[in-house]
Image 1 (cartoon, rainbow, N blue to C red):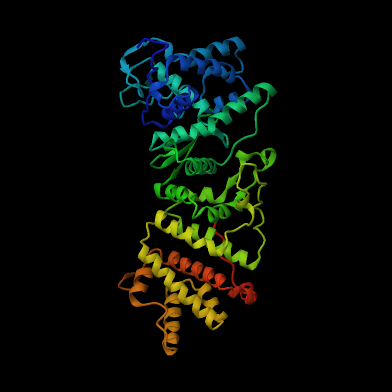
Image 2: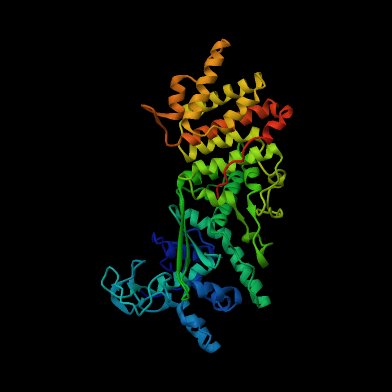
Length: 490
């Protein structure tokens, strides 16, 4: 296809993570809404920027991870490096030379066969691995080569690897790149002026959740339809370095993403902010003060959902509120970071959500992540409230300890049977009715639910919340000191 400067360059979404991330980078660079609107002139402006940016300290490190192209070879003269770089960047202008083969990404003829020096994570030119069309290398068009260079304004270098995001909805990809690209270009500008590399980014999972929250907060304030998207996301944390290619995949499941987004709503925001405020970890070494070098334990654990829901509830809901009630200090080795200007000051006033504010957020978690029915949630709430009433009415510290320390199904059943008999003698209804017990804990035929432990943890959380609301702990502080520590789960 011939190059026309003022016509559409031919960019479009392909469904391939690498290409689509590059397409998003070029589209945002051109300040266009859709890839189809990007023209040849827009690509020329990108080439003009990249010809300078690629030779800054900031970008040479990025290129060494993304490509193994020869223009970064230190043995080459500066003029040759720039000549090779320019020819790669301007590949979209070059005529087709492989008319019999089609591009692997765009609906147009291929220009050349390439290996990992042009497309990250492929094999080198020497190994005789074959692609589906029977060729030992990958056919690609000039537009495809230039589109991959768009990764330089889309993919941050996080923890020494590229952070490539695949999204079900390309709109999400555009939103993310709009968040990251100004910072990428700013770093290039600073590197060009100083001759040095800027501080590094780390924690790809934290970086993604961080931006998703920023996007959701913007949407909640503006109600702008351009900030709406659907679907889930995947992080491909990749290094194409010749010294050792690596790839780690982190999947953000739709239920987990839905929970994060809805937690930014007015009803849940304060509890959410306080939940994550003490979960920030300082980066080590020279980058310890860099905003993009921090990691958040809650953000990181979001990627383990829904499979890791029981661990998540115990680690971030149950254990912290018990520690707070005991007046425990933060766990050693998890230093909190200083508050940055862009963060909500209210989120840093306490290290853990107020126990009375947790239940609404926890209910949201149960609905969105686990798909738990409201009837079961209500049954757990009812059981826990009866247990809390029994503790308070009789000031029964022993009962509270039994509730807190029970773990195994037979221990829970024995506790509820004995308590039910005592309530009957007092003329009260049982602690839990048969149908309620089955709904909360049993699959039927004496078979405990797979999430029995989670259901009991939820009950314990609600008991603690209710007793806190009733100010029972004000006069019973010593009961907290005798409780065993929750199991450490990392």
